[in-house]
Amino acid sequence: MAGIRRISSGGEFEAKVGYCRAVVAGGFVHVAGTVGQGEDVVSQCASALEIIGKALQEAGAGFADVVRVNYYLPDRHEFDACWPMLAGVFGANPPAATMIECGLIDPKYRIEIEVTALASAD
Image (cartoon, rainbow, N blue to C red; front, side, top):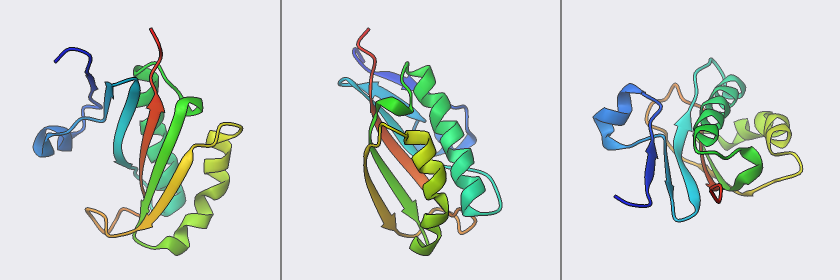
């Protein structure tokens, strides 16, 4: 389809579930909800941000281009441990943000992050 570019991370669930890591369309990069690996919320947050960063880079964008971020956590009390890392990633370019407490696809996951960024103009 014209005007739409799909970016795959090669993850096994993309084909199983029928999604891709990111879609560039309508002037935006839409990055799917992303979980990371690790034993706790902070390590999973760092891992998820790394995966998101790679998708943004492949789309020609970066964290400074993010205009919206949604955080999903099964325990809202764990979120504050991630704040310093998130403030460091977004720095002087903080996006609009929402945090939702909800169940995730597997209890081992402590955070899922979804972003929307401006796509490059070229």
